[in-house]
Amino acid sequence: MTDFAPLIREANLVNGDWIAADSGRTLDVTDPATGSVIARVPLSGTVETRRAIDAASDAFPAWAAMPLGQRVALMRRLHQLILDNQEGLAALLTAEQGKPLVEARAEVGSSAAYVLWFAEEARRADGAVIPSPVAGRKMITTRHPVGVVAAITPWNFPSSMLARKLGPALAAGCTVVVKPASATPLSGLVWGYLAELAGFPKGVVNVVTGSAREIGAEITANKKVRKITFTGSTEIGKELLRAAAGTVKRMSMELGGNAPFIVFDDADLDAAVNGAIIAKFRNAGQTCICTNRLYVQSGIHDRFMARFAERVAALNVAPGNEPGAEQGPMIDSAALTKMEEFVADALAKGASLVTGGARHSRGGLFYQPTILTNAGPDMRFTTEEIFGPVAPVYRFDTEDEAIAAANATDYGLAAYAYTQSLSRMFRLQDRLEYGLIGINEVLIVSPEAPFGGLKESGLGKEGSWQGIDDYLETKYTCIGGL
Ligand code: NAP
Image (tube, rainbow, N blue to C red):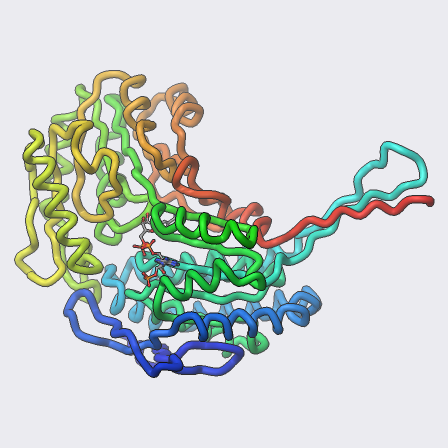
């Protein structure tokens, strides 16, 4: 495996300097597959965060004024550096997060793609000349970077979730303070190192690790921060929305999900089983757009279950850096305990275990890929985000019933369906209350497409031409007396 040690940064990046926490205290970063400590990063808090915000604020005017061509050239250099270091970055990601190396490599590739996409989108961030309703006036709109952006990211996609924030923020001319998740800070800190290598001016990218409470409190209260972009749980997203109300910041929220995966009688069975495996077990089920609930129509139910169970029981559970690994460890022991609780709750309420249902014989943080049938609406995972390798299967009879069940949640991030009926595809597109809909396809994320949830799954879009909008203010100017 590629050596990732040269990419490890055990300090915070503030105003171009790599610094420790004032207290000298650190956080251990562990490999979830082995439990061993791979690095120690600063346990920073209020003071360090304020310093990083000041640095970003001081760097903003010059960065925003930099000619677009130069900014785009820096973004392109960053894109190339990510690709040049793809193997090392993937190995680092697997080491701290646990996902199979093949998935880590894909995530890093996706990060690079987002940076390039937004470098190109910046060149199209134009304004308008509005036809004036009266004589002698010119009505013009222009677009401007919002200012200092604070980006808070989760541990499950610590590289690509940041790419979707840093990419549009930098391209738009904003400066950034990044707070990566404490479980996976290295994949966040390395962005600081790569930005430095690419030649971004000091203070444009700052990265602070440590106390979520202290860093979050400073970010939300500080008037110099004009926008917060957050990816994480709905619970923390709501806290941030409340806390930031006092300074009326722009807020982008990519929050939790509870994705339904609907298999209709007329589905291509092989395609549905393949899709179900990927959409459920990718990253050990720790993906915001992961399938939470599988709804399978009565006519195909038994055939689907037979094949799905056979494939799931054969999944190779192993450390992410082992060749052929398909499911790595859970992120921490709380996640493992949660799987046990979901399974116990479902069994007590009448579900039947098809495969798995316990900790894996590999020990540590490994959990068996699990399927339960006869799932019902009263079971906890019907309304709660599972975020792990447990697949509950619900049987249904009619399309109306499946759509109603699919929509019966406060979340609205991703939904999947397998059917050969074109008219049904359009009905699903209309009626499923989700921001992302995959029909006969589960790998639906790409920089060209808008990513974002409805309902309590979030606010705003990342990716697509819409992804840069949240980082730009529109000014309207009316010139009269012409
Ligand atoms: P989380 O607990 O909400 O944490 C996310 C980030 O917020 C981490 O950096 C965390 O820091 C920080 N944080 C926690 N409390 C905070 C506070 N009071 N103020 C400021 N920041 C705070 O979520 P997670 O467990 O890392 O990630 C899993 C969740 O993210 C799931 O719900 C998943 O669905 C969601 N997610 C959504 C998307 C999407 O695009 N919609 C993508 C990926 C994940 P610490 O790590 O230091 O606690």
